[in-house]
Image 1 (spheres, rainbow over the protein chains, first blue to last red):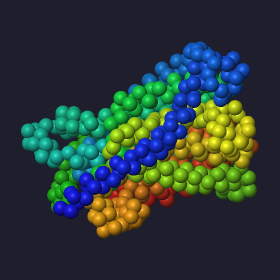
Image 2: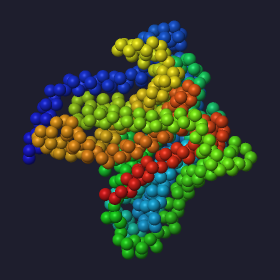
Image 3: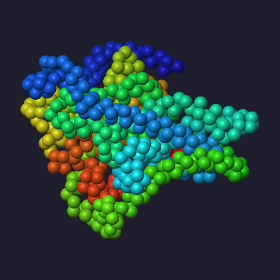
Image 4: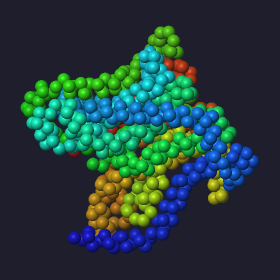
Length: 285
Length: 314
Protein backbone atom coordinates (compact mmCIF):
# COMPACT_ATOMS: atom_id res chain seq x y z
CA UNK A 1 0.00 0.00 0.00
CA UNK A 2 1.04 3.55 -0.63
CA UNK A 3 1.05 4.40 3.05
CA UNK A 4 3.69 1.81 3.83
CA UNK A 5 5.98 3.50 1.36
CA UNK A 6 5.34 6.97 2.67
CA UNK A 7 6.09 6.29 6.30
CA UNK A 8 9.85 5.73 6.05
CA UNK A 9 10.44 8.89 4.01
CA UNK A 10 8.44 10.95 6.46
CA UNK A 11 10.48 9.54 9.30
CA UNK A 12 13.78 10.29 7.59
CA UNK A 13 12.69 13.87 7.05
CA UNK A 14 11.87 14.31 10.74
CA UNK A 15 15.29 13.06 11.71
CA UNK A 16 16.86 15.88 9.78
CA UNK A 17 15.17 18.49 11.95
CA UNK A 18 15.86 16.56 15.12
CA UNK A 19 18.17 19.10 16.71
CA UNK A 20 15.61 21.92 16.43
CA UNK A 21 13.07 19.74 18.18
CA UNK A 22 15.49 18.85 20.96
CA UNK A 23 16.64 22.43 21.37
CA UNK A 24 13.11 23.75 21.76
CA UNK A 25 11.90 20.90 23.96
CA UNK A 26 14.95 21.06 26.23
CA UNK A 27 14.33 24.75 26.74
CA UNK A 28 10.68 24.14 27.61
CA UNK A 29 11.55 21.24 29.89
CA UNK A 30 14.15 23.34 31.63
CA UNK A 31 11.65 26.14 32.12
CA UNK A 32 9.15 23.61 33.45
CA UNK A 33 11.41 22.18 36.12
CA UNK A 34 12.83 25.57 37.15
CA UNK A 35 10.36 26.15 39.99
CA UNK A 36 11.08 22.72 41.41
CA UNK A 37 14.84 23.11 41.22
CA UNK A 38 14.75 26.62 42.62
CA UNK A 39 12.56 25.63 45.57
CA UNK A 40 14.89 22.71 46.29
CA UNK A 41 17.89 25.06 46.34
CA UNK A 42 16.12 27.51 48.66
CA UNK A 43 15.18 24.66 50.99
CA UNK A 44 18.83 23.65 51.31
CA UNK A 45 20.09 27.13 52.21
CA UNK A 46 20.33 28.63 55.65
CA UNK A 47 18.18 31.53 56.80
CA UNK A 48 21.22 33.79 57.26
CA UNK A 49 22.44 33.05 53.76
CA UNK A 50 19.04 33.96 52.27
CA UNK A 51 18.58 37.14 54.26
CA UNK A 52 22.16 38.27 53.54
CA UNK A 53 22.54 37.33 49.87
CA UNK A 54 18.89 37.47 48.82
CA UNK A 55 16.51 34.76 47.73
CA UNK A 56 17.58 34.72 44.11
CA UNK A 57 21.35 34.56 44.64
CA UNK A 58 23.45 31.46 44.21
CA UNK A 59 23.60 29.36 47.38
CA UNK A 60 26.38 30.14 49.86
CA UNK A 61 25.36 27.51 52.37
CA UNK A 62 24.16 23.95 52.53
CA UNK A 63 22.05 22.71 55.40
CA UNK A 64 19.11 20.45 56.11
CA UNK A 65 18.00 22.64 59.04
CA UNK A 66 14.96 23.96 57.20
CA UNK A 67 13.65 20.43 56.74
CA UNK A 68 14.11 19.76 60.46
CA UNK A 69 12.30 22.97 61.41
CA UNK A 70 9.37 22.24 59.09
CA UNK A 71 9.20 18.61 60.17
CA UNK A 72 9.26 19.19 63.93
CA UNK A 73 8.21 22.73 64.79
CA UNK A 74 5.98 23.13 61.74
CA UNK A 75 4.09 19.96 62.71
CA UNK A 76 4.53 18.48 59.24
CA UNK A 77 5.33 15.11 60.80
CA UNK A 78 1.98 14.88 62.60
CA UNK A 79 0.10 16.17 59.58
CA UNK A 80 1.69 13.57 57.34
CA UNK A 81 0.37 10.87 59.70
CA UNK A 82 -3.13 12.37 59.54
CA UNK A 83 -2.99 12.51 55.77
CA UNK A 84 -1.87 8.92 55.45
CA UNK A 85 -4.71 7.70 57.68
CA UNK A 86 -7.32 9.71 55.79
CA UNK A 87 -5.97 8.76 52.37
CA UNK A 88 -5.82 5.03 53.09
CA UNK A 89 -9.30 4.98 54.61
CA UNK A 90 -10.90 7.01 51.84
CA UNK A 91 -9.31 5.03 49.01
CA UNK A 92 -10.33 1.67 50.46
CA UNK A 93 -13.86 2.73 51.39
CA UNK A 94 -14.65 4.60 48.22
CA UNK A 95 -13.44 1.84 45.92
CA UNK A 96 -15.22 -0.82 47.95
CA UNK A 97 -18.56 1.00 48.05
CA UNK A 98 -18.31 2.10 44.43
CA UNK A 99 -17.55 -1.45 43.31
CA UNK A 100 -20.71 -2.68 45.07
CA UNK A 101 -22.90 -0.15 43.33
CA UNK A 102 -21.18 -0.67 39.99
CA UNK A 103 -21.58 -4.43 40.29
CA UNK A 104 -25.31 -4.17 40.99
CA UNK A 105 -25.88 -1.64 38.21
CA UNK A 106 -23.78 -3.33 35.55
CA UNK A 107 -24.78 -6.95 36.05
CA UNK A 108 -28.43 -6.84 37.07
CA UNK A 109 -31.45 -5.34 35.32
CA UNK A 110 -32.11 -2.73 38.00
CA UNK A 111 -35.09 -0.62 36.92
CA UNK A 112 -33.90 2.88 35.98
CA UNK A 113 -30.34 1.70 36.56
CA UNK A 114 -28.97 4.10 34.00
CA UNK A 115 -30.72 7.06 35.57
CA UNK A 116 -29.40 6.07 38.99
CA UNK A 117 -25.88 5.85 37.60
CA UNK A 118 -26.12 9.30 36.04
CA UNK A 119 -27.54 10.85 39.17
CA UNK A 120 -24.62 9.42 41.12
CA UNK A 121 -22.13 10.77 38.60
CA UNK A 122 -23.84 14.15 38.59
CA UNK A 123 -23.34 14.33 42.36
CA UNK A 124 -19.60 14.17 41.83
CA UNK A 125 -19.66 16.91 39.21
CA UNK A 126 -21.30 19.43 41.53
CA UNK A 127 -19.09 22.31 42.58
CA UNK A 128 -18.11 21.40 46.15
CA UNK A 129 -18.93 24.95 47.23
CA UNK A 130 -22.61 24.07 47.21
CA UNK A 131 -21.95 21.41 49.86
CA UNK A 132 -19.54 23.17 52.21
CA UNK A 133 -21.83 25.04 54.58
CA UNK A 134 -24.41 22.25 55.03
CA UNK A 135 -21.66 19.61 55.37
CA UNK A 136 -20.01 21.49 58.21
CA UNK A 137 -23.44 21.94 59.84
CA UNK A 138 -24.25 18.24 59.49
CA UNK A 139 -20.89 17.32 61.01
CA UNK A 140 -21.57 19.57 64.00
CA UNK A 141 -25.02 18.06 64.40
CA UNK A 142 -23.63 14.52 64.37
CA UNK A 143 -20.87 15.51 66.79
CA UNK A 144 -18.12 14.52 64.37
CA UNK A 145 -17.03 18.05 63.45
CA UNK A 146 -13.26 18.46 63.82
CA UNK A 147 -12.51 14.74 63.56
CA UNK A 148 -10.61 12.83 60.89
CA UNK A 149 -13.66 10.59 60.68
CA UNK A 150 -15.71 13.49 59.31
CA UNK A 151 -13.05 14.22 56.70
CA UNK A 152 -13.05 10.57 55.63
CA UNK A 153 -16.82 10.28 55.41
CA UNK A 154 -17.33 13.43 53.40
CA UNK A 155 -14.62 12.56 50.90
CA UNK A 156 -16.02 9.06 50.47
CA UNK A 157 -19.49 10.47 49.84
CA UNK A 158 -18.25 13.01 47.33
CA UNK A 159 -16.00 10.59 45.41
CA UNK A 160 -18.48 7.72 45.12
CA UNK A 161 -20.29 8.90 42.02
CA UNK A 162 -17.21 9.11 39.85
CA UNK A 163 -15.76 5.75 40.85
CA UNK A 164 -19.11 4.01 40.50
CA UNK A 165 -19.38 5.39 36.99
CA UNK A 166 -15.89 4.30 35.97
CA UNK A 167 -16.13 0.85 37.53
CA UNK A 168 -19.56 0.39 35.96
CA UNK A 169 -17.99 0.90 32.54
CA UNK A 170 -15.23 -1.53 33.34
CA UNK A 171 -17.54 -4.25 34.69
CA UNK A 172 -19.82 -3.81 31.70
CA UNK A 173 -16.92 -4.73 29.45
CA UNK A 174 -16.26 -8.06 31.18
CA UNK A 175 -17.41 -11.09 29.17
CA UNK A 176 -21.00 -12.09 29.99
CA UNK A 177 -20.21 -15.80 29.62
CA UNK A 178 -18.26 -15.87 32.87
CA UNK A 179 -21.27 -14.69 34.81
CA UNK A 180 -23.62 -17.12 33.17
CA UNK A 181 -21.25 -20.00 33.79
CA UNK A 182 -20.97 -19.03 37.45
CA UNK A 183 -24.73 -18.73 37.75
CA UNK A 184 -25.25 -22.16 36.22
CA UNK A 185 -22.77 -23.53 38.71
CA UNK A 186 -25.02 -22.13 41.41
CA UNK A 187 -22.85 -19.26 42.62
CA UNK A 188 -24.77 -16.60 44.56
CA UNK A 189 -24.62 -12.85 43.85
CA UNK A 190 -22.09 -12.10 46.56
CA UNK A 191 -19.94 -15.02 45.50
CA UNK A 192 -19.87 -13.80 41.90
CA UNK A 193 -18.88 -10.36 43.14
CA UNK A 194 -16.10 -11.59 45.38
CA UNK A 195 -14.61 -14.42 43.36
CA UNK A 196 -15.16 -13.35 39.75
CA UNK A 197 -15.75 -9.63 39.38
CA UNK A 198 -13.32 -8.22 41.91
CA UNK A 199 -10.27 -10.21 40.77
CA UNK A 200 -10.98 -9.19 37.17
CA UNK A 201 -11.26 -5.55 38.21
CA UNK A 202 -7.82 -5.50 39.79
CA UNK A 203 -6.13 -3.43 37.05
CA UNK A 204 -8.91 -0.86 37.06
CA UNK A 205 -8.86 -0.71 40.85
CA UNK A 206 -5.09 -0.18 40.89
CA UNK A 207 -5.34 2.73 38.46
CA UNK A 208 -8.19 4.31 40.37
CA UNK A 209 -6.45 3.83 43.71
CA UNK A 210 -3.34 5.64 42.43
CA UNK A 211 -5.51 8.48 41.20
CA UNK A 212 -7.74 8.80 44.23
CA UNK A 213 -4.85 8.62 46.67
CA UNK A 214 -3.23 11.69 45.12
CA UNK A 215 -6.56 13.52 45.02
CA UNK A 216 -7.31 12.83 48.67
CA UNK A 217 -3.75 13.53 49.76
CA UNK A 218 -3.82 16.85 47.89
CA UNK A 219 -7.21 17.97 49.16
CA UNK A 220 -7.40 21.26 50.99
CA UNK A 221 -10.98 22.44 50.80
CA UNK A 222 -12.69 19.60 52.68
CA UNK A 223 -10.07 19.76 55.43
CA UNK A 224 -10.72 23.48 55.90
CA UNK A 225 -14.44 22.76 55.99
CA UNK A 226 -14.68 20.05 58.64
CA UNK A 227 -11.54 20.55 60.77
CA UNK A 228 -10.59 23.28 63.20
CA UNK A 229 -7.75 21.99 65.39
CA UNK A 230 -4.21 22.36 64.01
CA UNK A 231 -3.07 18.97 65.23
CA UNK A 232 -5.78 17.23 63.22
CA UNK A 233 -4.95 18.98 59.96
CA UNK A 234 -3.88 16.91 56.99
CA UNK A 235 -0.75 17.94 55.24
CA UNK A 236 -1.97 20.60 52.81
CA UNK A 237 -3.76 22.57 55.51
CA UNK A 238 -0.77 22.19 57.84
CA UNK A 239 1.50 23.48 55.09
CA UNK A 240 -0.51 26.66 54.73
CA UNK A 241 -0.34 27.10 58.50
CA UNK A 242 3.41 26.65 58.33
CA UNK A 243 3.58 29.32 55.67
CA UNK A 244 1.61 31.67 57.90
CA UNK A 245 3.89 30.99 60.86
CA UNK A 246 7.21 31.32 59.03
CA UNK A 247 6.28 34.19 56.74
CA UNK A 248 9.74 35.43 55.88
CA UNK A 249 11.65 32.17 56.38
CA UNK A 250 11.45 31.01 52.80
CA UNK A 251 13.80 28.09 53.36
CA UNK A 252 11.35 26.57 55.86
CA UNK A 253 8.37 27.16 53.57
CA UNK A 254 10.29 25.64 50.65
CA UNK A 255 11.37 22.63 52.69
CA UNK A 256 7.80 22.10 53.93
CA UNK A 257 6.36 22.22 50.41
CA UNK A 258 8.95 19.73 49.20
CA UNK A 259 8.18 17.30 52.01
CA UNK A 260 4.50 17.54 51.09
CA UNK A 261 5.24 17.08 47.40
CA UNK A 262 7.38 13.98 47.83
CA UNK A 263 4.68 11.36 48.63
CA UNK A 264 2.59 12.18 45.57
CA UNK A 265 5.71 12.29 43.41
CA UNK A 266 6.60 8.80 44.64
CA UNK A 267 3.12 7.49 43.84
CA UNK A 268 3.42 9.10 40.45
CA UNK A 269 6.76 7.55 39.54
CA UNK A 270 5.96 4.17 41.07
CA UNK A 271 2.59 3.90 39.37
CA UNK A 272 3.17 6.13 36.36
CA UNK A 273 1.43 3.74 33.97
CA UNK A 274 -1.52 3.22 36.31
CA UNK A 275 -1.68 6.89 37.05
CA UNK A 276 -1.88 7.94 33.45
CA UNK A 277 -4.33 5.19 32.55
CA UNK A 278 -6.46 6.30 35.51
CA UNK A 279 -6.55 9.83 34.12
CA UNK A 280 -7.49 8.52 30.74
CA UNK A 281 -10.34 6.36 31.87
CA UNK A 282 -12.81 6.66 29.07
CA UNK A 283 -11.22 9.44 27.04
CA UNK A 284 -9.90 6.92 24.58
CA UNK A 285 -11.74 3.69 24.42
CA UNK B 1 -7.89 18.80 42.25
CA UNK B 2 -10.67 16.58 41.39
CA UNK B 3 -12.14 17.63 38.20
CA UNK B 4 -9.80 15.22 36.68
CA UNK B 5 -12.89 13.27 37.61
CA UNK B 6 -14.54 14.39 34.52
CA UNK B 7 -12.31 12.49 32.20
CA UNK B 8 -14.50 9.47 32.34
CA UNK B 9 -16.36 9.50 29.14
CA UNK B 10 -18.63 7.49 26.97
CA UNK B 11 -17.26 4.10 26.32
CA UNK B 12 -18.06 3.48 29.92
CA UNK B 13 -21.71 3.26 29.03
CA UNK B 14 -22.31 0.78 26.31
CA UNK B 15 -25.16 0.98 23.90
CA UNK B 16 -28.34 -0.99 23.94
CA UNK B 17 -26.73 -3.80 21.97
CA UNK B 18 -25.54 -5.70 25.00
CA UNK B 19 -28.72 -5.18 26.90
CA UNK B 20 -31.32 -7.92 27.00
CA UNK B 21 -34.35 -7.29 24.85
CA UNK B 22 -37.39 -5.67 26.44
CA UNK B 23 -39.37 -8.81 27.14
CA UNK B 24 -36.52 -10.68 28.67
CA UNK B 25 -35.55 -7.72 30.77
CA UNK B 26 -38.97 -7.50 32.35
CA UNK B 27 -38.77 -11.12 33.33
CA UNK B 28 -35.29 -10.70 34.75
CA UNK B 29 -36.09 -7.54 36.68
CA UNK B 30 -38.30 -9.52 38.99
CA UNK B 31 -35.26 -11.57 39.79
CA UNK B 32 -33.10 -8.77 41.19
CA UNK B 33 -32.57 -10.18 44.63
CA UNK B 34 -32.74 -8.14 47.81
CA UNK B 35 -29.00 -8.69 48.26
CA UNK B 36 -28.27 -6.92 44.98
CA UNK B 37 -30.58 -4.08 45.90
CA UNK B 38 -28.69 -3.73 49.15
CA UNK B 39 -25.37 -3.57 47.31
CA UNK B 40 -26.69 -0.61 45.35
CA UNK B 41 -28.53 1.00 48.21
CA UNK B 42 -25.63 1.29 50.67
CA UNK B 43 -23.39 3.42 48.42
CA UNK B 44 -26.37 5.37 47.15
CA UNK B 45 -27.49 6.30 50.64
CA UNK B 46 -23.96 7.41 51.58
CA UNK B 47 -23.84 9.69 48.55
CA UNK B 48 -27.35 10.97 49.15
CA UNK B 49 -26.56 11.84 52.76
CA UNK B 50 -23.27 13.62 52.00
CA UNK B 51 -23.97 15.13 48.59
CA UNK B 52 -27.62 15.40 47.58
CA UNK B 53 -28.98 16.34 50.97
CA UNK B 54 -26.37 19.06 51.66
CA UNK B 55 -26.81 20.43 48.13
CA UNK B 56 -30.52 20.70 48.73
CA UNK B 57 -29.85 22.40 52.07
CA UNK B 58 -27.71 25.03 50.40
CA UNK B 59 -30.66 26.04 48.25
CA UNK B 60 -32.84 26.37 51.32
CA UNK B 61 -30.22 28.31 53.27
CA UNK B 62 -29.71 30.73 50.41
CA UNK B 63 -33.15 32.21 51.15
CA UNK B 64 -32.30 32.91 54.78
CA UNK B 65 -30.12 35.04 56.99
CA UNK B 66 -28.23 32.91 59.47
CA UNK B 67 -25.05 33.06 61.53
CA UNK B 68 -25.17 29.44 62.66
CA UNK B 69 -26.78 29.98 66.06
CA UNK B 70 -30.50 30.02 66.70
CA UNK B 71 -32.99 29.78 63.91
CA UNK B 72 -32.39 30.95 60.36
CA UNK B 73 -34.51 33.97 59.36
CA UNK B 74 -36.25 33.70 56.03
CA UNK B 75 -35.41 36.70 53.87
CA UNK B 76 -36.74 35.61 50.50
CA UNK B 77 -34.54 36.72 47.61
CA UNK B 78 -32.67 39.36 49.63
CA UNK B 79 -29.31 37.54 49.40
CA UNK B 80 -29.57 37.47 45.64
CA UNK B 81 -30.57 41.10 45.28
CA UNK B 82 -27.77 42.08 47.68
CA UNK B 83 -25.30 40.46 45.32
CA UNK B 84 -26.19 42.92 42.57
CA UNK B 85 -24.88 45.80 44.65
CA UNK B 86 -21.92 43.93 46.16
CA UNK B 87 -18.70 45.25 44.60
CA UNK B 88 -16.65 42.23 45.76
CA UNK B 89 -19.13 39.89 44.10
CA UNK B 90 -18.76 41.91 40.89
CA UNK B 91 -14.95 41.62 41.12
CA UNK B 92 -15.14 37.90 41.84
CA UNK B 93 -17.45 37.31 38.90
CA UNK B 94 -15.25 39.33 36.57
CA UNK B 95 -12.16 37.51 37.80
CA UNK B 96 -13.90 34.18 37.27
CA UNK B 97 -14.64 35.04 33.65
CA UNK B 98 -11.00 36.04 33.20
CA UNK B 99 -10.00 32.80 34.91
CA UNK B 100 -12.19 30.54 32.76
CA UNK B 101 -10.91 32.12 29.56
CA UNK B 102 -7.28 32.44 30.64
CA UNK B 103 -6.91 29.17 32.47
CA UNK B 104 -8.95 27.21 29.96
CA UNK B 105 -7.59 28.85 26.83
CA UNK B 106 -3.91 28.91 27.71
CA UNK B 107 -3.70 25.47 29.25
CA UNK B 108 -5.48 23.95 26.24
CA UNK B 109 -3.21 25.75 23.78
CA UNK B 110 -0.12 24.73 25.75
CA UNK B 111 -1.34 21.17 26.30
CA UNK B 112 -2.35 20.62 22.68
CA UNK B 113 0.89 22.13 21.39
CA UNK B 114 2.99 19.94 23.64
CA UNK B 115 0.96 16.86 22.76
CA UNK B 116 1.47 17.47 19.05
CA UNK B 117 5.19 17.98 19.56
CA UNK B 118 5.60 14.91 21.75
CA UNK B 119 3.17 12.60 19.99
CA UNK B 120 5.59 10.64 17.82
CA UNK B 121 7.91 8.27 19.63
CA UNK B 122 11.55 9.38 19.35
CA UNK B 123 14.53 9.65 21.62
CA UNK B 124 14.04 11.83 24.70
CA UNK B 125 10.28 12.16 24.34
CA UNK B 126 9.66 10.19 27.55
CA UNK B 127 11.83 12.57 29.58
CA UNK B 128 10.16 15.66 28.16
CA UNK B 129 6.71 14.26 28.80
CA UNK B 130 7.50 13.25 32.38
CA UNK B 131 8.97 16.65 33.21
CA UNK B 132 5.94 18.43 31.85
CA UNK B 133 3.34 16.38 33.60
CA UNK B 134 5.18 16.03 36.86
CA UNK B 135 3.68 19.26 38.33
CA UNK B 136 0.26 17.68 37.97
CA UNK B 137 0.93 15.41 40.96
CA UNK B 138 1.67 18.32 43.28
CA UNK B 139 -1.31 19.66 45.13
CA UNK B 140 -2.53 23.11 44.20
CA UNK B 141 -1.48 24.24 47.67
CA UNK B 142 2.09 23.08 47.06
CA UNK B 143 2.04 24.64 43.60
CA UNK B 144 0.89 27.90 45.15
CA UNK B 145 3.71 27.91 47.68
CA UNK B 146 6.33 26.99 45.09
CA UNK B 147 5.30 30.01 43.08
CA UNK B 148 5.06 32.29 46.08
CA UNK B 149 8.75 31.63 46.51
CA UNK B 150 9.34 32.23 42.79
CA UNK B 151 7.50 35.55 42.86
CA UNK B 152 9.38 37.08 45.80
CA UNK B 153 10.80 40.51 44.94
CA UNK B 154 14.36 39.15 45.02
CA UNK B 155 13.29 35.80 43.58
CA UNK B 156 14.00 34.14 40.26
CA UNK B 157 11.05 35.51 38.27
CA UNK B 158 12.34 39.06 38.47
CA UNK B 159 15.93 37.87 37.97
CA UNK B 160 15.07 35.80 34.90
CA UNK B 161 13.01 38.60 33.37
CA UNK B 162 15.92 40.99 33.92
CA UNK B 163 18.25 38.47 32.25
CA UNK B 164 16.21 38.54 29.04
CA UNK B 165 16.08 42.32 29.12
CA UNK B 166 12.74 42.97 30.83
CA UNK B 167 13.68 44.94 33.88
CA UNK B 168 10.95 44.53 36.48
CA UNK B 169 13.13 45.58 39.40
CA UNK B 170 11.92 44.16 42.66
CA UNK B 171 8.36 43.85 41.51
CA UNK B 172 5.93 42.42 44.06
CA UNK B 173 3.91 40.24 41.72
CA UNK B 174 1.42 39.01 44.29
CA UNK B 175 1.04 42.26 46.19
CA UNK B 176 0.30 44.38 43.14
CA UNK B 177 -3.44 44.33 42.31
CA UNK B 178 -2.59 44.64 38.60
CA UNK B 179 -0.42 41.54 38.41
CA UNK B 180 -1.60 39.28 41.23
CA UNK B 181 -4.29 37.32 39.39
CA UNK B 182 -2.14 36.92 36.29
CA UNK B 183 0.70 35.65 38.44
CA UNK B 184 -1.59 33.03 39.99
CA UNK B 185 -2.78 32.09 36.52
CA UNK B 186 0.77 31.31 35.39
CA UNK B 187 1.24 29.00 38.36
CA UNK B 188 -2.06 27.24 37.66
CA UNK B 189 -1.20 26.71 34.00
CA UNK B 190 2.22 25.35 34.93
CA UNK B 191 0.36 22.57 36.71
CA UNK B 192 -2.55 22.10 34.29
CA UNK B 193 -0.76 22.01 30.92
CA UNK B 194 0.70 18.56 31.53
CA UNK B 195 -2.70 17.16 32.36
CA UNK B 196 -4.25 18.53 29.18
CA UNK B 197 -1.24 17.20 27.28
CA UNK B 198 -1.87 13.68 28.59
CA UNK B 199 -5.50 13.84 27.49
CA UNK B 200 -4.56 15.05 24.02
CA UNK B 201 -1.81 12.45 23.70
CA UNK B 202 -4.45 9.81 24.33
CA UNK B 203 -6.71 11.44 21.77
CA UNK B 204 -3.94 11.56 19.18
CA UNK B 205 -3.19 7.90 19.76
CA UNK B 206 -6.76 7.20 18.66
CA UNK B 207 -6.27 9.11 15.39
CA UNK B 208 -5.68 7.10 12.26
CA UNK B 209 -2.13 7.91 11.03
CA UNK B 210 -2.95 6.62 7.54
CA UNK B 211 -5.32 9.55 6.99
CA UNK B 212 -2.62 12.10 7.76
CA UNK B 213 -0.06 10.34 5.60
CA UNK B 214 -2.56 10.18 2.75
CA UNK B 215 -3.22 13.90 3.07
CA UNK B 216 0.52 14.54 3.05
CA UNK B 217 0.82 12.58 -0.18
CA UNK B 218 -1.94 14.72 -1.64
CA UNK B 219 0.11 17.79 -0.80
CA UNK B 220 -1.62 19.08 2.32
CA UNK B 221 0.75 21.15 4.45
CA UNK B 222 1.22 20.67 8.20
CA UNK B 223 -1.38 23.25 9.18
CA UNK B 224 -3.97 21.85 6.74
CA UNK B 225 -3.37 18.32 8.00
CA UNK B 226 -3.81 19.47 11.57
CA UNK B 227 -6.88 21.58 10.88
CA UNK B 228 -8.79 19.24 8.56
CA UNK B 229 -7.52 15.78 9.43
CA UNK B 230 -6.42 15.73 13.07
CA UNK B 231 -8.78 18.22 14.72
CA UNK B 232 -12.00 16.57 13.52
CA UNK B 233 -10.78 13.28 14.97
CA UNK B 234 -10.15 14.97 18.31
CA UNK B 235 -13.72 16.18 18.62
CA UNK B 236 -14.59 13.86 21.50
CA UNK B 237 -11.49 14.74 23.48
CA UNK B 238 -12.14 18.43 22.86
CA UNK B 239 -15.63 18.22 24.30
CA UNK B 240 -14.42 16.42 27.40
CA UNK B 241 -11.58 18.88 27.91
CA UNK B 242 -13.89 21.85 27.38
CA UNK B 243 -16.37 20.66 30.01
CA UNK B 244 -13.61 19.61 32.42
CA UNK B 245 -11.81 22.92 32.16
CA UNK B 246 -14.85 25.09 32.68
CA UNK B 247 -16.08 23.10 35.67
CA UNK B 248 -12.54 23.08 37.05
CA UNK B 249 -12.25 26.85 36.65
CA UNK B 250 -15.43 27.41 38.60
CA UNK B 251 -14.13 25.18 41.40
CA UNK B 252 -10.68 26.76 41.61
CA UNK B 253 -9.99 27.55 45.22
CA UNK B 254 -6.80 26.04 46.63
CA UNK B 255 -4.24 27.83 44.55
CA UNK B 256 -5.71 31.27 45.14
CA UNK B 257 -6.11 30.49 48.83
CA UNK B 258 -2.49 29.38 49.07
CA UNK B 259 -1.10 32.37 47.18
CA UNK B 260 -3.19 35.41 48.08
CA UNK B 261 -6.39 34.40 49.94
CA UNK B 262 -8.25 36.67 47.53
CA UNK B 263 -6.11 39.73 48.33
CA UNK B 264 -4.69 42.31 47.85
CA UNK B 265 -7.91 44.28 48.46
CA UNK B 266 -10.04 41.40 47.12
CA UNK B 267 -8.55 41.80 43.66
CA UNK B 268 -7.85 38.08 43.21
CA UNK B 269 -11.14 36.95 44.68
CA UNK B 270 -12.85 34.20 42.68
CA UNK B 271 -16.43 33.17 43.38
CA UNK B 272 -15.22 30.10 45.26
CA UNK B 273 -12.82 31.97 47.54
CA UNK B 274 -15.32 34.74 48.17
CA UNK B 275 -17.98 32.15 49.00
CA UNK B 276 -15.60 30.48 51.45
CA UNK B 277 -14.77 33.76 53.12
CA UNK B 278 -18.38 34.82 53.47
CA UNK B 279 -19.47 31.42 54.76
CA UNK B 280 -16.59 30.49 57.03
CA UNK B 281 -14.68 33.64 57.96
CA UNK B 282 -17.64 36.03 58.21
CA UNK B 283 -20.05 33.18 59.12
CA UNK B 284 -22.75 34.73 56.98
CA UNK B 285 -24.27 31.36 56.08
CA UNK B 286 -27.26 32.60 54.12
CA UNK B 287 -25.29 34.87 51.80
CA UNK B 288 -22.53 32.28 51.49
CA UNK B 289 -25.07 29.67 50.40
CA UNK B 290 -26.52 32.08 47.85
CA UNK B 291 -23.03 32.54 46.38
CA UNK B 292 -22.63 28.75 46.26
CA UNK B 293 -25.94 28.49 44.42
CA UNK B 294 -24.68 31.00 41.86
CA UNK B 295 -21.56 28.89 41.30
CA UNK B 296 -23.79 25.87 40.89
CA UNK B 297 -26.02 27.63 38.36
CA UNK B 298 -22.99 28.70 36.33
CA UNK B 299 -21.62 25.15 36.36
CA UNK B 300 -24.86 23.30 35.63
CA UNK B 301 -24.89 23.88 31.87
CA UNK B 302 -21.42 22.34 31.57
CA UNK B 303 -22.30 19.48 33.90
CA UNK B 304 -25.24 18.67 31.65
CA UNK B 305 -23.03 18.91 28.54
CA UNK B 306 -20.71 16.44 30.15
CA UNK B 307 -23.47 14.07 31.25
CA UNK B 308 -25.05 14.21 27.82
CA UNK B 309 -21.76 13.05 26.36
CA UNK B 310 -21.44 10.37 28.99
CA UNK B 311 -24.84 8.94 28.09
CA UNK B 312 -24.56 9.26 24.34
CA UNK B 313 -24.84 5.89 22.74
CA UNK B 314 -22.20 5.17 20.20
